Image (cartoon, rainbow, N blue to C red; front, side, top):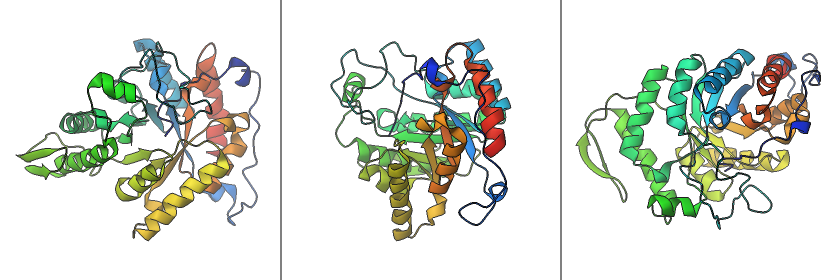
Length: 330
């Protein structure tokens, strides 16, 4: 998936304070026979917020401004390190190069979200994405449960299996079978969250009855699977509560969503039980039309890259986006 798209939006492509976002009418028939005011409200998440607000004051301010603007959730990305030399192909650019420099700040998402939990007490908190195969599942289960407790049950786990082999090598984590390891880690964590005296025996995780306390407030921490591959789609159908494809093109995105829906139906799952997150990239040029297009595809939550609000005047642009997009057509 678009595990960490770090391309800063050029200043020239971001509306100035004086420029108004084009608005769409809220009345009139929609293609499904309902009027726009009768459609299900769209949720908006601020993706990669942690990478543009690393320090105390900036993090506090972006959390407060995002909450006031009407964003429903804050999301932090993850890479433990960025190698100085990368031979692995980044799957979400035409040239296969990650649009980031080694000095790009990528705070630990769970620590950053713990700060955000206090700074923005009404917002949900998610990872986009956490590279689960790189982590110890018992420790991760404890960290996520603790964050869920401290936040009052607001955590969502967006995850992926990783694309950067050099990062795995630096961490001493096997690259091979990382998908199978990821899936088993999810099952092991859910066993720990389900109750005391959990027991699990797998290929990668093996423990006799143990208790991991505290457990999450939520009965089930939502798991969102990221990625565009067949393996990611299969994983979303089998294990996930949500799907977060990296594809930004509307036509291809619609195809991915349809495959997830069909896969869920074939597996005996309610297709609507898998929520859909989608990145808001080129749609920023005409955000209201983009919202309606993604709504028709079946997207439940639009992930707006925080990089659109980086730099001088960025927080004012964020507030304007809330006033002229979220509060108008969300």
